[in-house]
Structure formats: C-alpha cells, structure tokens
Image (cartoon, rainbow, N blue to C red; front, side, top):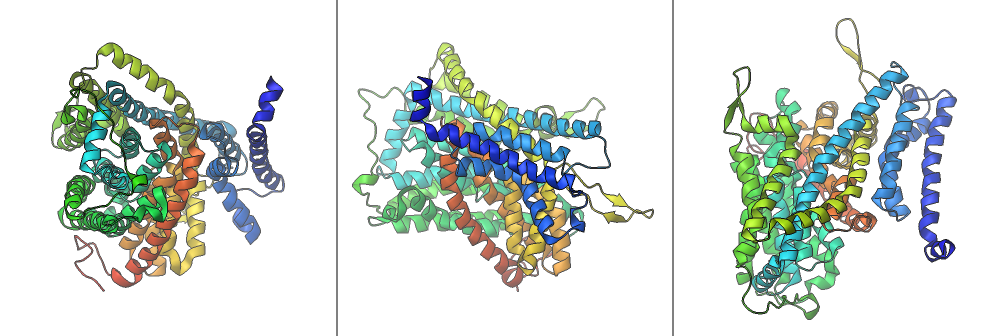
Amino acid sequence: MAKQNLEQKPGISRNYVWFMLVTLLIFAVGFALLLGGISGTNFQEHGALIQVITFFLAFMPILLVLIGMLGFNLSALKVAPFAFLLAVLLSYTFFANMEHGPVELAQAIWAQTWSGIVSSFYIVGLILFSFLILDLMQTSGAMDIVKSKLAAISGGDRRVQLIIIGLFVPIFMEGAAGAGTPAAIAAPFLVGLGFDPVVAVVAALMSDGVCTSFGGSGLTTMSGGADLVSAGVSNTDLNFAAAGVFHMIGILVMPFLLIIFAYGFKGFKGKGIVGYCLWCGVIGAVLMLIFSNFIGGFITDMGTGLIGIILAIVGLKIFKVETPKELYAEPPKIEGTPKYSFVRALSPYIFVLIILPVTLTVSKYIHVTNPDGSQIPLWNWVVGKVTYNGWIDLLLFLCSLLSIITLRYGFGNYWKAFGRAFKKVIPVFVIMASLYSVANIMKIPFISQVADEAGNVTRESLSMIKLLAQDIAAVTGPLYPAGAVLIGAVGAFITGTNLGANQLFATMHMHAADILGINKIMTFASSNAGGSLGNMICPNNVTAACATVGITGEENKVMKRVVIMFLITFVLYAVISMLYVYVIFPNVSAEMTNVFARMG
C-alpha cells in the first residue's frame, strides 16, 4: 500500500528530497568558503565574484522559501523550517560575528528566535479570530443573506463585488488596524461571497499592497520615518504626503489589475465596466491624494476606504454595467422569511469596521496613570502590555463574542466553531514562527560598528539584511530611486512589515541620497512605497491570508499568481520614483506640509 501511494504521488516526495539537497548545497557553499578563509567579516577584501556569492548567501534564507514554493511546488509548512535552519547555520558559520564567542552568538540567535515565536503567536491570534468570525457567519446562515443583498446591490456582477470588497475594504481595514487585518477580513468575506479562495487571497494582498504606508492609523510612516524627522530632513505630514502621491497611482490602476488577474481581459466584456473601473480608480486616487496631503495621514486609509465604498456603490447608478453570463453571481435562494435582517447578518463585520478604528483612535486621547504618577495615553499602556498585534487580537475576540448575541448563535456552537478554527491555525503557527525567526536572525550584525577615540564611526555595523540593501544601492547608482523601491520591497518581504523595512533603511536612504545629491524625502518615500508593495509577496502575509480561508498548504498557488501582479506594480512604482525624485518633486523640504507646496 505504501508503495502504491508513493507511485500515485511520485513528484511530491521526490521534490521534497531535492529541496532538502538544495538547502544542504547552499550551506555547503558558505561552509566551503569559510574553510577557505573567506567569511562575512572579510568578504570585501576579495574579488567581485566573492561579493556576489556573499550577496546571494545573505539572501538565501528567505529566497529558499520562494525556491521551495515556486520551484518545487511545496507548501510553506514544508519549506519554512528549512529556511530557519539555513539562517541559523549561516549565522553560526559564514555570517558569524568573530568578535563574539559561540555562547554569546547562540544567545543572540535564541533571543531573535524567541522574538519570532512571540510575534507569530499574536499574528496567529489575528488569523484565529478572523477565521472564527467567518465560520460564525457561514454556519449561522448569515453569509447567505449577505450574499443575496450584495448580489442585488452589484447586479450580481462578480467584477463589481471584487472591486468593492476586494479593493476598498482592505484599504479601510489597513488604516483601521493594519497588522495583516485587511487580508484576514477581506479574503474570507470574498470566499463567503463565492469567490475561489486563491482568487480571494491574491485580490486582498494586491489591494493591501498599495496602502500599507498608512497602516495602523499611520503608524507605518509615522514611526518608520522618524529618523528623517529627528534629523530635520522632513516632518511627519510631509512623509505622509510623499507616500500618498505614490499610492494614488497604485489605487488608480488597481481596479483594472484586479479584473485582469481574476478574469483576464475578457473581464472587460460588456458596457460600462471600463468606465466603472476608471470611476473607482479615480475616486480612490483623489481620496488618497486629498487625505494624505491636505487632511492627515492618520486617517488616510480609513477615509479612502470608507468613502470609496460609498462612492463605488453610487457609481453603479452612473455606469449601467452589463454583466456577461459567465460573470454573473447567482444569489443564494433563501426559503421563507430570512433569519436575519441584512444589518444583523453583516453585524460581525460591522463590529470590526466600527470597534477597531474607534477604539484605536480614541485610546490615543484617553490617559492612564503609571505607578510613578506619570500620565500616558491608553494606547501606549495597552501596547506595552500585549503589543499592538495583541490588542487587535483582543478586539477581534470581542467582535466574535458580540456576534454571538446579534446572530443568536449560542455559546455551545461558538466553542465548536472556535475548536474548528484553532485546529486550522496550528500548522500556521509553525510556519509563522519559522519565518519571523528567519527575519529576526537576518538582523543580527556579523560586523560590529567600530568608532575611533573621537567617537567617529570608522566601520558601520552590517547584517544580512543591511548587506542586501547596500549592494542594491551600489548597483543602481543614479537609478537609486528605483532601487529604493526594490529595497523597500525586499525589506518588507523579509521582515514581514512595511514598518520594519522603513525602520531598517530610512537612515541608509538619507545617506545614499546625500551622496547622489537627490531629494532625501522622495527617496525615502520611494522605499516606503516599495515596502508597501512587498506586503503582497511577503511569505508571512501569504501564509496568514491562506490560513484565514482554509487553504493552508496551497501557498505556492497564491505566490505564483501574486508575484506577477507584484512585478507589474513594482515596475510602475519604479518609473514613478524616478519621475518624482528627478523631475516632479525634486525640491520638497522639511518646511512644507505637502509635496505640492513647491514643485519643479
């Protein structure tokens, strides 16, 4: 019987063996160089070939994830632990800091690993409660009522539903909560409406990729651009404004890209759909521009998403969209009197749309007293206790409990649904813990910062992730603004967050822009925008989104499709960055509050 099973699936076991051999081969290259007297601490003393090899060795712990998922068609569960193992082995050999002993290095690796485990715990909590809310709606029958109503609003047009729910809901949720919430809410919602889970996940990731610079009530840019503010190079409002002029272009084209991705060019069949896509793209772009440059970055995503949803529905009255038969969604037939009203049926998501942004915003203005008598915002106090992601978990848990009341679900059924959701997130925890640990380990310096007696830095510290950024900068030269988009995307891809990429590279971008004589603010904005795009293909985000719709193990299918859309938007942003830095906004400065204050 075992032999028969092996013959039925010969590619799976063989692919896994080959993948393990590839992992071993990558490490063998680094170890062979180490035996030859070459390591991360002295690679710059050798030729160009060694420096190229060093670059790829630094990139390999995370590139191995792509190799396994795209090249060998393996699930993230089978790939992620090997990426972690490779990161540990390289950090202990080729990229080991020779100034520290093996015990001290082991402590650093364990500290970063434990940090990754803790981070993944909170992210998995987000997935757990998002999946639980979807389960409540599906098993209670509420989702059928929502489907029927949305089908009526959209005329049953799949493309319209994809734009309203797949574009504007993720944008709103990114501003309301961030931390992976957009895909965790929008993707299950689309699946509940009848969309293929892979399509739902990719659509949510695509839309989230053009707005995360304003994630978590602006935290991504506010905190990520703090180095520019403290250096007097920029101010927070200007950093928001610069990010807005990038993402308004991304939102402008996103309705078209969503339809091309989901249905190909045949998705534009029928009168009205092109005009409707243009309408939604333009209102999204205009809202993003107005909020980011003239109202405030803290509410840019929430304002753009919420008003965008309303105006997208209004647009259906303006553009009489004709729906081809193959793109029509037959609403579910509900026999007899509906169990719930539309508002009651949608109440779990209404709770999410109201409780998250209101609580997170109001908590910044409510102060609590510390044991020492000092006053701090409730926001800071809660984040200090359970972390930002942990706070989102608690709020989603609250939303799920309130849903029991509005859906009249019963605690017994609730705990059964909780058990179903919990079983689904166990493998996700293994994946997320591995990937977060990889990202953290890649931050460990293998070259320490050295200063002379006067305190002047004679040698900058260098980690695997900083090495990647510096090499990209060196190769791009005058094309550095476009390279900054790539650096930001790589940073988010590795760290799992746009904020992480900004915090890692903001200072480096200032130095590079100073050397090249280009605008520092727009150079950072290029990377900030690129970091947002990197969220599309970040393995952490892909894994989390897949888990919320119950397709853990099929991350490779999602990755193959979302990578194409990432490349399209990356090229677009790279071109825009060159135009903004050198032509349109070369003179913006810290004295301004938006990028239009002085152009040319």
